[in-house]
Length: 171
Image 1 (cartoon, rainbow, N blue to C red):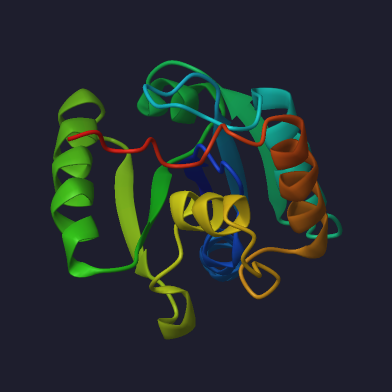
Image 2 (cartoon, one colour):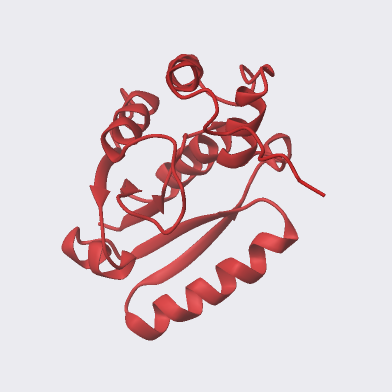
């Protein structure tokens, strides 16, 4: 049995993430979608909220399990019996970052492989940051995220409306 590990912050999860996960679940016996607890970046949703949105996104997908984790990804892979890390590539600039991360993970855990799936063309522009910014500015994100994520994002932005708006530049 080959178990794969798809890590991310998923703040929020979008159709690009979902596409990569569903395709990976066709390749591997089990896919663990792993929501990273405390990344070194500002997040809109709490770990619990992100977990709930990800779980709802994969409801009914028997080969996909959703967990939260903290610490090194390779340690979480070992703790969960995963032999493969799945990553998604959208654009060429993603390759350099993912390549460096794959080499670092291989140095830490040579027994864990890294597989990169290229996103479908219609998702190449998608990132969680893009989704948050468009939503914060009142744009239509219905083609970018599932309905439950759109509702959660709009609700969160009503609670903290200035959280994502750009800081004005002062001359």
